[in-house]
Each structure stands twice: as structure tokens, then as C-alpha cells.
Image 1 (cartoon, rainbow, N blue to C red):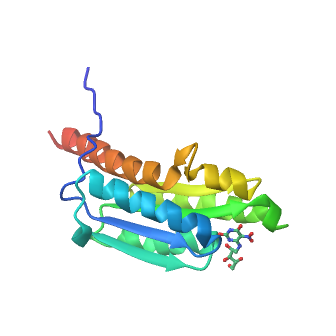
Image 2 (image 1 turned 45 degrees about the vertical axis):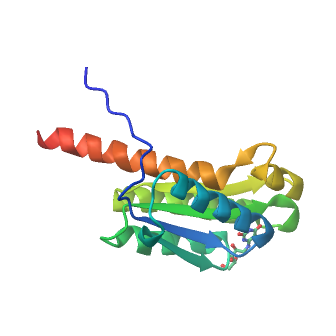
Length: 159
Ligand code: INI
């Protein structure tokens, strides 16, 4: 049996982050968590690029531009959609979720989904460094892991 698992070593990995400004009180915490997690796992600050966009709807197109760059190995998309603050919550959630998923498949690179979709601001705080952890940090670690899994799968295929 050939088992391929992703290491959580970010040394040498080049990571692009795209973060929404909408709900920046939350998204800034997700971004801080993601950057801290990348550093903690050995990603060099010089190998990190951060782009800011207006809202969650704009995340996929900029994630795509980052993923298309030869000098980016993995992308992390960060945002926060809160049901209470919009009547078009479902549209925003669906656009960002399907858009980010499509970018990952089209680019064949990890595009981690660090977008909170919550009912309330309190639930968002809980997941942005509160009692339920930091989903931005978790997404960053998943990006590192998935980049290694992809490398492993591709390397074995060439053997
Ligand atoms: N964008 C978000 O990131 N979160 C939200 O909760 C949100 N709400 O509530 O509407 C939101 N809207 C803006 C949207 O992402 C786009 O920026 C806008 O529609 C322009 O394309």
C-alpha cells in the first residue's frame, strides 16, 4: 500500500493569501492567525503575499490570480459572511464557496477555504481566535498539508 500524507513543514513553500475587508474586525483576526500559523510551520515571510479585497464575493478571482502565479504554491482565502448583516447571505456564501472550489480544481493547487459563514457576530468571534479556535490558522495549515500531499501524489505518478 502506498500511503501519502502531507507534512506540516512550510519551509520553502510560497503562499498567497487573499482576505476580505468586509467584517474586517473578524477577518483581520483570521489573517493574523493564518500568518502566525504559516510562520510557526516554517514559512518565510518573504515567501508570503497578502492581497486584500472588498468582500467575500471578490475572493475567488484574486485567489485565481494568485494560484496562477508560478511563484505561489498554495493559496488561503479568508473572509466572513454573517447572516444577520445581509439579505443576500445565501448568494454570497454560494458564490465564494463554489468560486474557491473551482479555483483549486482549475489551478490544481491548494486553495484553503478560510471563510466563516455564521448566523451571528458572536459565532464568528468564536471561530476567529475565540473559544472554537482560529479558522484562518487552520486553513493556513491545511494549505501546507495539501501542497505536500499534491507533491507526493505527483512524484509517485512519475516514478
Ligand atoms: N461580504 C462579505 O465578505 N461578508 C458579508 O457578510 C457580506 N454581506 O453581508 O453582504 C459581504 N457582502 C459584500 C460582497 O462580498 C461583495 O463585496 C459585494 O457584493 C460586491 O461584489
